[in-house]
Amino acid sequence: VKERRLGALWATMERSSATTAMWRTMRKADMNGPRPRVFISSVVIGFEPFRQAARVAVEGAGAEPVLVNEDFPSLNTSSRNACLDAVDSCDLFILLIGAKGGWRAPSGMLVVQEELERARSRKLPVLIFIQDCQRDPDAEQLVKSVSDYVSGYFRSIFRDPVELRQAIGQALVTSLHTASSPKMNPANLNSLLKNPPQLAGQTTLRLVLCPERNEEVIDPLEFGKSEFLEK
Image (cartoon, rainbow, N blue to C red; front, side, top):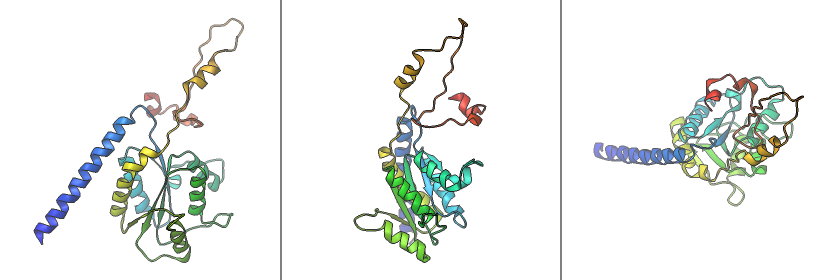
């Protein structure tokens, strides 16, 4: 029995080492570009350990996790718009389904379902992870929808945060390669600088700040942070 357990542990370590090596290769190849952004959608209350596990897995894969409830500051917009705008800003969408379906949006859909539909409309790659547990009717209906043999997704099952972290990490090894990361086109900036305004013959210095991604907005509060200055 001990030998079998050691053998299983060794096999797990080998798979983990191989996965880590692939992550490092992906990060090295993407050092000159922005990190892919991954939206993590799920219920929040009572699901915190799983959301944290998803964050760790995404960061380990060299991508940037987007968790609205945990990371976003107070915004001058509705919670619904903040979530959907965040989906729009991402390159890949992850849906975690547990025991509860969660809140419903004004559209009548579950909040997580509305986020999923937004990701679909943006043609983002979608990864589904379903907890092996008893579910309420809303969660059960959502699972049936995303598990449809034709229109659904090939999903992964997890039981605890450790299994979820491993499942997401394995899925991202290949999925991040298909996630689009549109970069700012330098030609567009050059066209804006061709005809600088004349200020009564004065010598001027024009400083242009642009995001790494097309259509991304730079938060003025980021200007003073050391991470922004290093870029």
